[in-house]
Amino acid sequence: MTRRVRAKLLRIRVAVEPAYDVCIGVGALERAARELRPTDVVLRDSGVPAGVAELHATTTIALAPGEEAKDWASLASVLAALADEARDRSTRLFVVGGGAALDLGGLAAALYLRGVDAVYCPTTLLAMVDASVGGKTAINLEQGKNLVGVIRQPSAVYADPRWIASLPEAEFRSGLGEALKSALIGGERFLAQLERDAARLVARDEAALVELVARCVELKARIVARDPHERGPRRALNLGHTFAHAIEHVAGYGALPHGIAVAAGLALALELAARSGVLADAALPARVRALASALSLPASLDELRAEFGHPLAPRELATAMRSDKKSVRAEPRFVLPVRAGKLELRVAAAPELVLAVCAPAAKQGRARRARARRARRMRSSPKTGS
Ligand code: GLY
Image 1 (cartoon, helix red, strand yellow):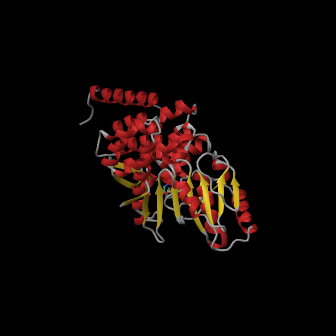
Image 2 (image 1 turned 180 degrees about the horizontal axis):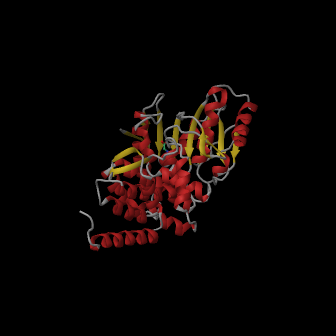
Image 3 (image 1 turned 90 degrees about the vertical axis):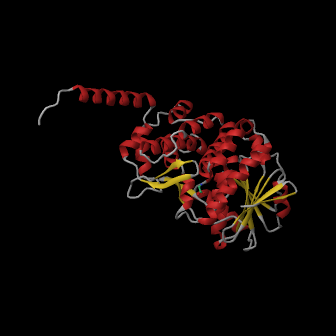
């Protein structure tokens, strides 16, 4: 993967069919504004503050902020607004917002006139490091998150780090959670770089953020180019997500930011990998816990429980995992780390192990002590029989 630097903007190619560039850096939004044609339409998350450069289009559609926008009603109203403008297939939909706006906007663009181009201007760290690349689009159903959608790549992405300065803290940390996942998938060099940059990132240093976004986009572009439709290697990007989606489901969607749930999901995936014999690098869980803490992310499910004041009961989590999109006949499948940069992609873990890793630490301690007592009794009881 090569980076091209032009007027301080990085360009990373996503080599899918058709290929597109992700343009990263201060000034990316002005670059997007220069690309706007009179027939283009802007879809803007109404929760995004003004401040960074604006895209002035003939038509701007306002979208409800956050996950709220990802329903049939919003999709229908965006499609109706596009139809009202009587645009033709040369119309492009410029989407300005976080992951939810890109998911909804990408789907509307894929459906309108059987597909017009979508141009993404992600405004959150989470959307820059993950949602804006790879073409996943979706709305939610009552039955679950992201159950309706298609994979359709955008025609360009403009990631301007100036948006990040004004992100609420929880939203910012959510992006760091997805970036931690990317580092674990990317391998030793990425992980070590994240360790070196953690303090600057937490302080929202612009140069460190640009480097982080570029590394995440490079990794994702490489994976998506090999497997755009998630039939194989792209599954790696779901590391920590079987747990994270269950956590979000049990807590109630929107109750806690996705990437923060992913951070706890990574800790659980590492624990499950250790207990099921998949993990080859025994030092990795402690290293990732330390890095999560340095990035002000929860380093365990208990830390997440304490921060959000939700019990996240293991049995409820296990039930939610059974209806995960990746489950096979209601048996959840997990992406588990072997070491940094190497993963097992479809592990069917024993249900009692899944329950055990989700148990609060105090309970795990009690269970461990009970097991030890049983083992001692077995050793000391007189042997009977032949
Ligand atoms: N967010 C994971 C993916 O795009 O595949």
